[in-house]
Length: 134
Image (tube, rainbow, N blue to C red):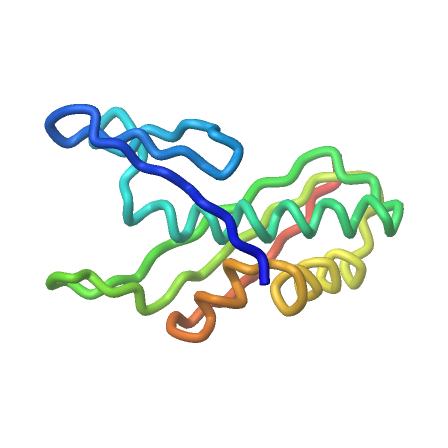
């Protein structure tokens, strides 16, 4: 088992300074910082993108651009539980192979991304992707 520790500190009013296990700072506040509720979908797409691009590099796919968006579907009432997180990936590259891209996403989501593995037990997560030449 691996143990990792993150930290949070109240700065003032509704401003919190979060620090990851490497002491990297993230400001959580509104409107000039990240919302706590946005951290789930942000972590999810960041994690899957990390794995997916690494897999595509190993498959020698020529990716020149890559972005993702995640939409949160949550309850209207507190505690605003997450119900669905649809993800949309956009790949830009030279002669990208549709099957290779799809496999890379699936491998990340099914094998490597710890955020996906955890959230999928309680939240419906779907994904789709598009490929553009460039």
